[in-house]
Length: 400
Image (cartoon, rainbow, N blue to C red; front, side, top):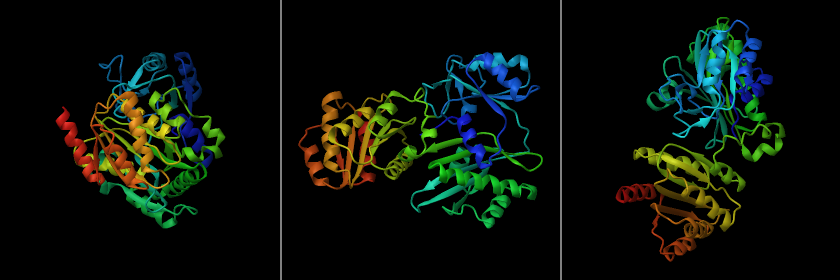
């Protein structure tokens, strides 16, 4: 589950994370009132509250010629209502939303902070080592996505102890890596420890502060904030569960959630169905190596029946961006034959008009293959994921 920036900042404040003063606004009048409450003389930042990164690189669909993005600096109070009016009720398209964009129904009015330096800080789960990894990078000139792709050595990765968090040695290492002045040491220690404590206590899967600002006095401040939570742990956090904003979710995402499936959309053309995040990432990585991208992936997890599997597959099949489907299942609790039966049921209802490649491994693998081979559906069975990706891309090219 993801939440908005203003919600994330409010959640992080009790953990000692310094944030600029801000207010949420749903109308232009509320935006002006919020600005005067936050910082009477300005300047202010107006931020579209949609669940997407790269808002500063976006444009509004109704006025693509308008170069102003979803994050704006406003220096004069007479411009607040005009700027807010251009954002509210308009659709913001970013590199992460896809061409349809997302409707902006609220904006965050925040006091503009003067900082001397900015950097990226993020916490994620390292599933291979069953640990939490902290990533930091100086981002004064490039954004973190470009750095990760072109100069990954500029990202410092530190494994944090699950219980104790960062050590004094790690804090010094981060301080040196970011070339921060020694007067920032105390604030950095408090900042990183606060992020770690929030991550563990709230059952987060990702916390991202992009950017962190370093003020003149050396103190750190979160200029943005993003948190993703483990859906399976939300029963422990009723207050966080109430923050869920179904308004933004695509119909397919909401449909997937009904079956406890995880569904995400991207900008590519391949639909991926898997039973594990690691399996999905592996397939997406192989696609990238072949200059292809995922359109979406559906993680069906375990504990499902044929009908639920069929419903999940239909979600992928009805995504208009999908030009080919890769199903990569490693059977354990989830039996491969259930996936095979679900494919047949989904194909019977919505048809199968794009190439589909299936790779099974594990429980009832042979039974699943037998079901599909006797179905007479125009699909391809692969022995491993590398073969599956190659065959799918070849089939997609031939079907053009």
